[in-house]
Image (cartoon, rainbow, N blue to C red; front, side):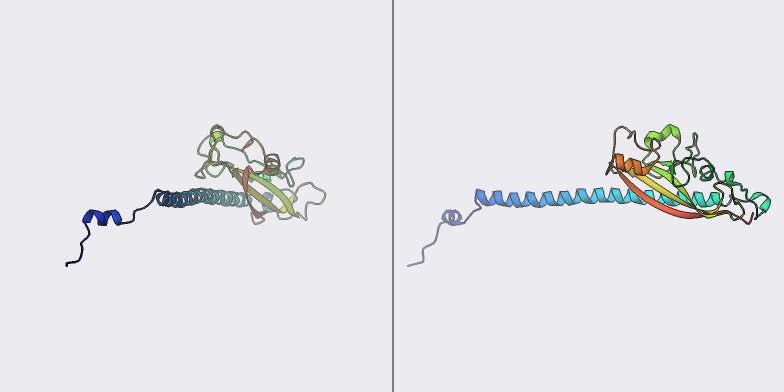
Length: 224
């Protein structure tokens, strides 16, 4: 007797198929994995945007440090007289207007440098757009980064005994601050140039801003 052969239809019916529960479990696992990947992608995009903003802010701080150093080269004594108590502080427009008697922001006070009213504004403005370009007052609503400066005395002029706010060496601190909110529809009324002191801003609006500080010494140019 020949062995019994199973019918093809019977063989197909005898095969085990996936149940609805197994399909649902597989779909659940796939959904969980996909959600994790999408969450990681979102975090990576946000992290990349914040890293880019920090890089631009760092460039802005370096630019203002170089501006202050540049201006310090024209901070000289009259007629090259190294023993003079007077100085040509007014030549250094980015910081010397604050280094005068009676200035409320000196020493140790924050101030926003003068904002240009017309382009070109390169090398002058304390307001910058998302790409780190200088802005004028008419474009204040486009500002993403704002700069404030503080000037503190380090070494007094030994030939200026009895005078006020006459120094040979200063420390300039630059702070660049920008909003933690990536996009806003209406410019924040507390942002640059509406409020000067970044510490006051952070106290009044905790967690609202990122801050980047940089510092440099400024020495009077005694060789001119």
